[in-house]
Figure 1 (tube, rainbow, N blue to C red):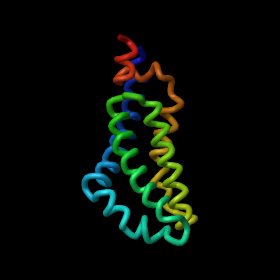
Figure 2 (figure 1 turned 60 degrees about the vertical axis):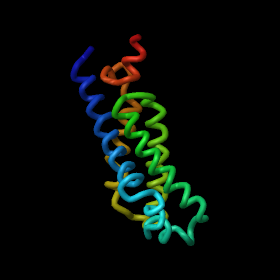
Figure 3 (figure 1 turned 30 degrees about the vertical axis):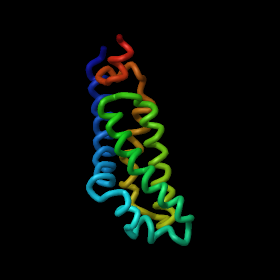
Figure 4 (figure 1 turned 45 degrees about the vertical axis):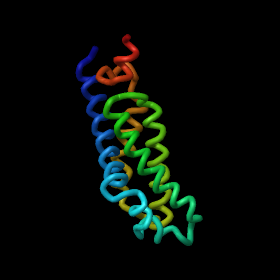
Length: 138
């Protein structure tokens, strides 16, 4: 085992996991998804662009995927599936921000996208400190 590779992979996974976990936690438990949905960013910004049911479901989908995906990344369980789901959130966020303001602050997405794509490209055998790796060894 190359310790530097394993620590680098763990660090990237934990950083991305905590970013998404905290964002999802805030949306689900601090604000509440219903409150979030009523905020001008969701409801007010897209009313003329998208049907209401899409806006409503997107608020729930992104909030819970961020929360659950963040937890899965932190513990390193079903990492690929978590990354696929979180990638879909980043695509939705990019599309949504682009609908409202074609030139927008990419910091909402760029760092998360770089970490996510990096984790998808890193060899699985580098991720020693994960639940997936522990289960595979047994």
